[in-house]
Amino acid sequence: MTSPSQQVVRDRLAPLLEELRSLAEQERGNPDNLLLMLRELEAVHRDVQDGPFRQSLPENRQKLFSLLQQMEKSGGWPYIPRLQLRTFIDLLGQDSMGMAA
Image (cartoon, rainbow, N blue to C red; front, side, top):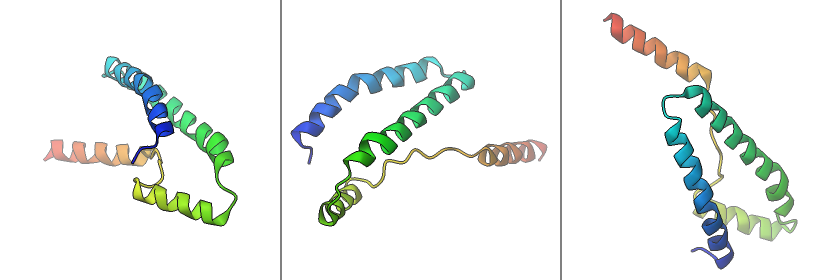
C-alpha cells in the first residue's frame, strides 16, 4: 500500500524517469553514452543511499526492524547490480566458440 507521501514522490519521479528512459532509447546503439548514463545513475543511487537514506534510518531497534520487514515485503533492498567485465568476456567467448562450430 502506498502512503500519500510516497505517492507524491512517485508523481515527482515519473517525469524524470520517463526522461531518462527516453534518453536511453535515443542513445540506443551508442554504448559509450549508455555506459556513462549507467555510471551516473549508479552514482546517484550511492549518493542517496549513503546520504539522505542512511541519515533517515531509525535509531530505535523496533522501528529499524519494522522498516526492514517493510523492505522485505516490498521487494528488498534497491540495489543496482553492476555488470562485471568478466560476464562480457565470457559471453564474447561463447559467441566466438559458437561461430567456430
